[in-house]
Length: 182
Image 1 (cartoon, rainbow, N blue to C red):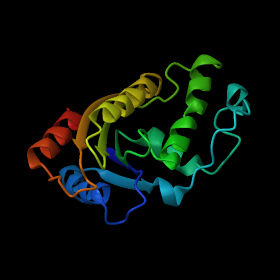
Image 2 (spheres, helix red, strand yellow):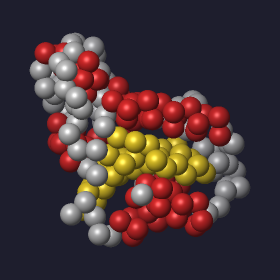
Image 3 (cartoon, one colour):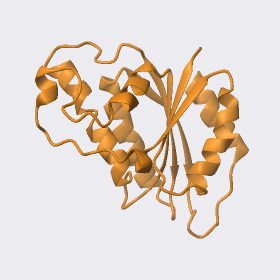
């Protein structure tokens, strides 16, 4: 059975990201779905201790189970608001902790550092029209996943959430799911 890992970077239980997660899940009914909410996960930041340059994993064990699910996933879907032109701090902390895989690849020669390839998508919601920021955030994920044996294939951008001047676009949602699954 294929596996979908949902990474929710919104602190709001009833916000736009939560609503889109509810909309996406039925499209993956044939998959085992695991969801992590990064605010509840409360990841410690990478402290550049260099442990991962010599060892598999991280000296900080708070994300060990998350990274087991991350490595085992076929699909990874990020759902994130824009905070100060980028990812919210807890998601940024998770991304920084990908250092364990960069060290595996570039210091210890693991090619690829994650055996199972990943199909990746990102849903980005912003209070204003911040398409340029969404483009930058997507590019940052694409850069990360070139090392992580994954490909960012899909993006669904939802602007103007602060003014409630947004709509959930079923066509864009289905396009997102189709691109993620292809």
